Image 1 (cartoon, rainbow, N blue to C red):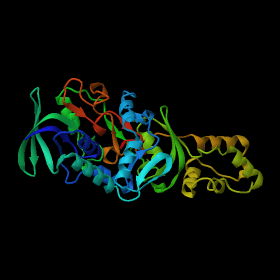
Image 2: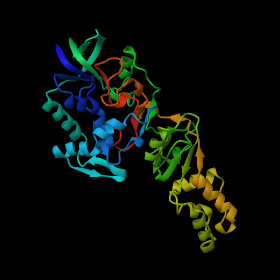
Image 3: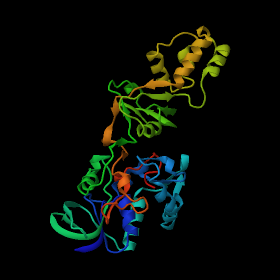
Image 4: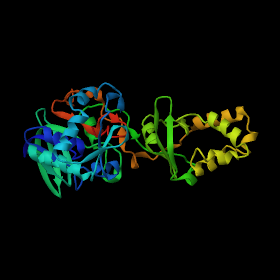
Length: 376
């Protein structure tokens, strides 16, 4: 079977590529349905883009690599496609756009675009062998137990990264890239909860509050969620992309403003209140109890000097914690790193050393923030 383009991977990148590649296109995926990560994204409603998308919202060894693609196809362009398919949507905080209905609407839209372009989709299909003879790629495909050989002028690696292996994620794109001489950057889980080996926050599981999470490289103001294993929530997931093992993170539990003036005013007005009672007015009750015990706080407000109140306020604004690790690829939303952008043309995503080989999507060393950036 001779075709123009063989696309490995029927996720968002692979399906979008199939809709635009032109010629005779075949998309293959080992899954039983296309767009499985789309289906579970955004709590089942798919955070399909972010109106504030800029190159600054992406991590890569080359921070300039994404500029060309982002300039040529903007969030407004994708939103136009969504609206042409009559998919209702709404904006949440920070420019995040979600479907009003189910995420499967986006899958259906991309499949419809593929069909319109004449692309063919083979599911439950695995790659058994792959070679290149200098003119074309020859792939041996196992389709439901039947071997078929496909010869294609172009090959697109769109199989994603290692995140969420229970959904079938593998390092296939990296293996193929290595085979054809493309360099890789180190990969690691990103947008992932952070863990503590002592389970110190197990009693706080489910407690959430606005916070600022920071390290030497980044800072994010969003929700913090305590879990049985550690810390999660948008602020933690965002910072996890910038965190490395062994590093401490700073947690500001009062990001709106330090509490010193508020605590001093409370001492003046209600000096007989216990410090535990006062903290519970500004933090979730269970968290206040935890901090009182961990930091050995006691006494009435009237007994707290300005110096002690300021020290407490400073500690609440800079609670230093050192995670023991992360939950890994099991729950990571994306993979950081991948196929080195130095090996690719930023305008076409074609390999510089092997014409006809392309790498797109999560397999490439371009990783977005939480909030629709990766989809865009």
